[in-house]
Image (cartoon, rainbow, N blue to C red):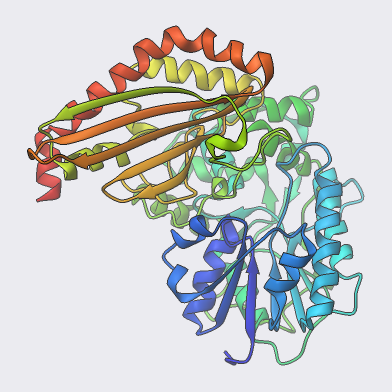
Length: 496
C-alpha cells in the first residue's frame, strides 16, 4: 500500500473497526485512529503501530484535526444504542464528518452501512442509508458498502443467533424470521474494506456486499444448532410478536441489551438481500479462495469463542450514558457527593496470585460470593432496559481498558497493581469498583477494595442507603473470597 496514503479509522474501539486496524497494518498501511478515549485505544495490541487522535465526531475541531493529512477515511460510527433519536444523532455526526473531510482535503471516505433494498425498511436501516447521504453531501467521494448480518465471533448479530439457539430448543417467533437475509462473514467484510483503500482512484457510489448464500434467519438458527451438536430447533411462527416485544425477549435471553436488540430486530422486518446491480465485483474481485459460506463462518466464529481468541466484541463500543452523567472519574473537587465503601486487608498471598484473582473477576468466573445477589441485580437491570450481567467477558483470564465486564466496564488497569471498573447498569448516579494491591515492607500484601458512588439528586442518595445493608454482606464476602482464591494451589502453578 502506498505510504503516502495515510488512513484514518473511526470506530477503532468497535467490533469491525478494531479488526480493520489490524488488517490494514498487516497490509503495511500508515494508520491513524480517531477515538474518544486514548487509554482505551492504547490497550489494543496495535496501539504502538498507529497514531492516536482523540476527540468526538460531533465536535468539528477535533474531527478536522484528526482528518488533516489523511487520504482515505473510514467511517464506522453508529449511534443505534443511543436512544430513540439515534437517527438524528447519526445524521448530524455524518454531516459534521463530511464537512471536516472536505476542509481537510480528504480524497476518499469509505463507509460501512446496511443493505436497504426492501420497500418495507426499518428505522435502523433508513438511518444507515441517511448517514450515507449525509457523508456524500460534500465534494469528497464516498464509497458506501452495505452489508447484511455480519457473522463473526463477538458480533451482536452472532451473539443473538448463538444464545437464542443454545437456550431455546422451542421458539415462538415472529413470522418475519422467514424473511430472506444475506449474511456475510466478518473476514469477507474486512477483505472488501481494506481492498477499497488500495483502489487507484477515488470512487463514489453504493455497493452491496453479501456472502455466497441467501437464506432466512430461521435457516441460520437451524444451521447453528446442527454445527453446535444440538437437536433441530422447533420454530413456531406467531403473528403477534412485534419487534418491540421480540427485542424485550432477546434482551432478557441473550447478552445483547434491549436498546441494541430493538433496532437489530426491527431490521429483520426487511428482506436484506444484496442487489446484483450494486455489485462491487468490478472494483474489488472476490478473495482468491472465494467468499466464506454461512456454515464455515459459524464454525470459524465458534472456534474463536471456544479458544478464547475473540479479538473484538460488539460490547467494546462504549455504551451511551444518561445526559446527567459527566465524564468518568470526575475529581472530588467537582462538587459532587461521593459515598465510599472501602475494605483493606493484609494477607500472605503473593502479589502475583492476588492480581490473577482480581483480573479473573466477573463473567463465568463470578464475583467471589453472593453471586445470587449479583444475578438478581443483573436481572433487575435487564428488566428496566439495562445491559445486565449477560455481556460477560471478552476473555476469561485477561482484561484490557475498555472491556465490558458484565454490567461494568474497565476504566483503568495497571497490571499487577490496580483495576478500576465503571458501572454501566442503570443507576440514579455513577458508580465505580476498584481493586488495588501493594507490597508491604514486611513481605505481606495489602489489598484495597473500594466501591464509590456519586448520587444524582435525592433519589440517588436514597438508592445508596437502600442498598447499604446488602453492601455489608456483599463487599466483605468479596474481598475475603478474593484473598482465599489467591491462595489456591492452581494459581501458584499457573504463575510458575
